Figure 1 (cartoon, rainbow, N blue to C red):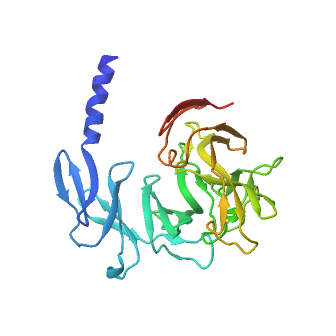
Figure 2: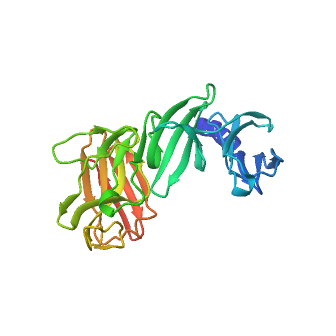
Figure 3: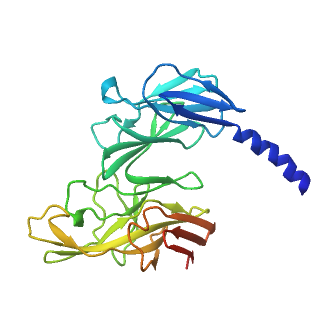
Length: 308
């Protein structure tokens, strides 16, 4: 056993000695403590990332207004040679076009880059690009895009209209294009492509709308990719008049928050989190200790939960 541990320690130490970063608008490689500047063009850059094979580097030109350009993702080898560059293509709704503002990028395979493209404060477009062909192989609307551990699917909050009253901004959970939570009683997951509206779960009584959902940041897959955990806060909003079109033009109750554990089939187990506020839950940590058990830590709370 000790021999096995000694074998792994040098491998892990070697892997830890290779990293990349953006510093003063240039991409740098740090290898064995030696810092190597890979780019020298002075363009505004963000987020250098190593590929899973640790043989290639991706970063993107931020394209600030003064540079008059379209954000571009660049792929380098470890010596700084440019291998290719591309602009993510937004194709989920016509007309197709380039991503004009990149929030972040991530390797989701040695030949695939995922781009989170800003659309509005309430919605982004997630695009996976196959580097060898330049094809867009996945295109989704929403927020908080999170790849499943098996690498097959993406969980995310679905898209919502930014300038709309609260009852039209209720959050919902999707796996790729399928809405799985919340669902009207007695129904199952619903395929929802493009900008189609989700199933309506908000109840209206006159000017009062109940059951409006707002997810806290973070979606957490179980290690077997069968469940997703999230913190869901629901509240009631009463409009001041039938013409009210914004949250400020009405009153809302204090949100009631719960840990939701949702299966792929849309089955949801809710665990109330009494005594916690949305502020307490803005920075949560969820750790799955097994496929059916997890621990949640946030300000003022530390609990474990089991999937029924």
